[in-house]
Length: 253
Ligand code: SAM
Image (cartoon, rainbow, N blue to C red; front, side, top):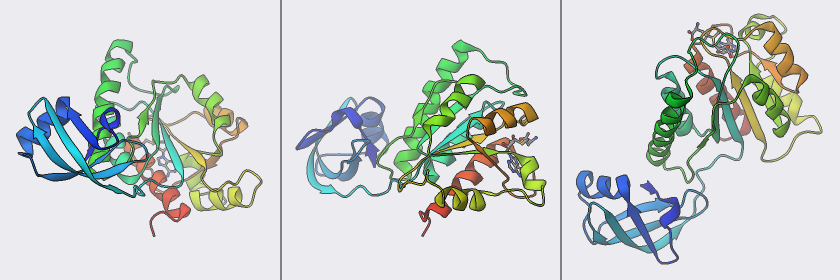
């Protein structure tokens, strides 16, 4: 299963670069072999290899398939930049589960030091992880990974979504605290409800959020939600929130 966005013609597809290398060197693809290719958007097809080299694979389209593995809800995980390679886990698992996009952002209690040069390299690597995870999950699109947002930019972007949830562990501890389910049902009963919403799920890094950040997000239209009474690690919270949202959307069956 490959996602080859730029190389998808009417009757033929081409795999180049690492995809061709993987197909020939790892999968041992040869003429006549069949596999599935998606254009990364709406078209998916069963193809049969015509020519195979480690630089280029040409394959003919045998049959167009219905690409229906994308969730109805476009859920973006906004993750305050965590330490080490934790963001890789969030992207890999979030992509498998069905995240629409990822927005790394800066917040007050973020522990890692921001380094622009390092960040460009990491965003490249994160893109590769998203592609591999999307292929393994047989998705028809690769989630976008946006450039690092400042806190201001993130707060401003809340208005672009139909629903924004701000994961706040204190909310999970309050007896009257809202969870994902009640936030979604309140939203469903409101005028903002649409069939295929754009949803933003905001998660803090290891140090969590300050009260001021919670208040700013709320003032910008986000709903504060808890994810249960236990404190989740930063890399767990987005995955759990995403799963809860997709479950509420009816996606999980
Ligand atoms: N110190 C741990 C770590 O190193 O990962 C826990 C960090 S927790 C404060 C990180 C973020 O996960 C929080 O800012 C919040 O967005 C989210 N989170 C964790 N547990 C949560 C809960 N029970 N309810 C809502 N959000 C939660």
